[in-house]
Amino acid sequence: MKARFLHILVALGFVTLAAGLALAQKYARPEYNECIRAYYDPNMYNWLTFENTCNLALSVTIIWRNPPYGAGTLDIRPGGHAGTGNSREEVNHHGGYLLYVCPDGYAPVESDGRTLVRRPVNDYVCEKIR
Image 1 (tube, one colour):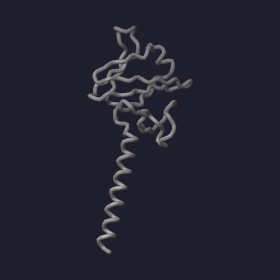
Image 2 (cartoon, one colour; image 1 turned 60 degrees about the vertical axis):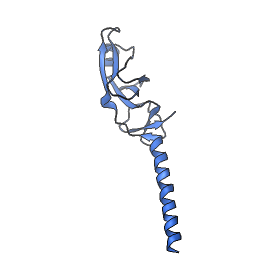
Image 3 (cartoon, one colour; image 1 turned 120 degrees about the horizontal axis):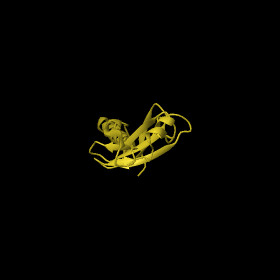
Image 4 (cartoon, one colour; image 1 turned 90 degrees about the vertical axis):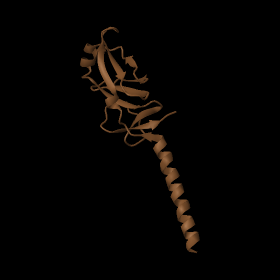
């Protein structure tokens, strides 16, 4: 009887571990903002540009701080750069921007795990989309 009970506990442990791994693959911690360097590129009309300084492809969602909240996403390879097409004046007009950075293949969602980030939020997670 003890052996069967132990067998059931071990089986339940594997199911719990598998469920945890599946959840871990669906979400990623949003810990990549420090990988992004912002600058105004003199070689590209002085537009706001972002550089990925990490060795992982990243998806960068940019949202204006003030309404109307425009949003856009740039996929940037390691060491790559991507311009927004926005001048310093346009960025200042919107009160600046907030970045929500996730690994490539993930999108920022609010901490409830359901709502795609399309307005400024304090907390978010990265949800696997592909």
